[in-house]
Image (tube, rainbow, N blue to C red; front, side, top):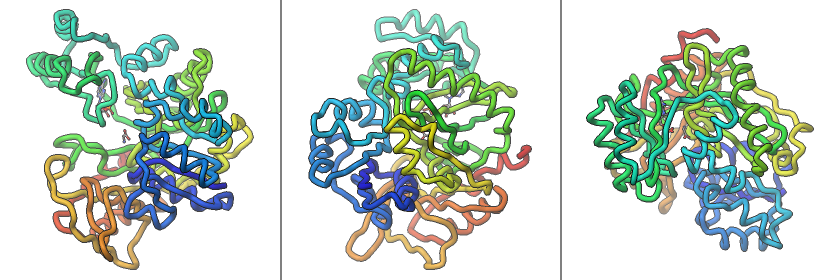
Length: 426
Ligand code: AMP
Ligand code: GLY
């Protein structure tokens, strides 16, 4: 098969790494890719939102399957574009329709969907700009901390957690006042859930689904989960508290009703679903849906997927996922993200990256580029070091060692990835 993968982050490098291992892959293209993806695929200079450009490429290069990494083109309707195009409708396509991508594209849609299908989530109400007074009165009925979410996509920055009522009021005014533009035209205000987070992923063809290995990501810049949110500082898989009993609850209460709910509403969903869950004293609740894989979770999940990803994705696109197998490597996997000093605020880029030949683990690039004969930093999140281990602590130790040995100016990484869950029952 000739495959085109859309995206340019560590998530896409990990997906490309896995796709490239399949005997079914004749040729793998990635658009636009980054300074590392060209080791496993051919980078193509196309923007993920340039549907016409992507269409021409798929036709001219006789691409058999398109896989979408990030959420933006999905929310913009790339799957519908392909379906409605006379020359593209038979191309195997992995990614939900625009209606399906609303699970991530509109927090209000996601909340209403969960309510309709009795899927456990935080209590909430939605308000628009004309309803500031009602929104303030609703805030007053809640206890701190307060959770406010811009309805639409806001590049991962649309969730504000406010410690006091006063902060929450100010955040509310900012959100409804246009801080996130169109994305903040509506605001979801919801109950704060106490607990520990876990990321659960499925592949679905709209009827059948298969669970991928679960993972936990670390979002804050500082050790001990302090400081501002980032695009992700590391991940581990498996998650010790996600026992078979807990995962069974997740499947029964959340995964199955979601897949059945989408089908019952006539929403065409062929792709990944990422369930951002909170374990509330043993009861899993949905914090958010995403219509794609997680980053940096993919950088550990792909290590633990033993089965052929091309075969699975073909099942997703064709609707016969039930006839495919998905096996999971029992080993642990850990990922440590190397970032540019200063990130997620201001940082410099263009520094040379030096990687020893005998580096441990698998490197997934996020913000790198080639310049002359150098590999250079080109973003805040630079490189993910992913490692296997017989146990999670062994995987973590290897990933940290790898992270230590790679050098570039102002390199920073967290040394405490996974530490919070290690003491828990496996
Ligand atoms: P999101 O951008 O939707 O991934 O949200 C960012 C983060 O905010 C989540 O990963 C959680 O850590 C936190 N969060 C979102 N909603 C809630 C909630 N209802 N209760 C507690 N934490 C939340
Ligand atoms: N790791 C969280 C996300 O990809 O949204």
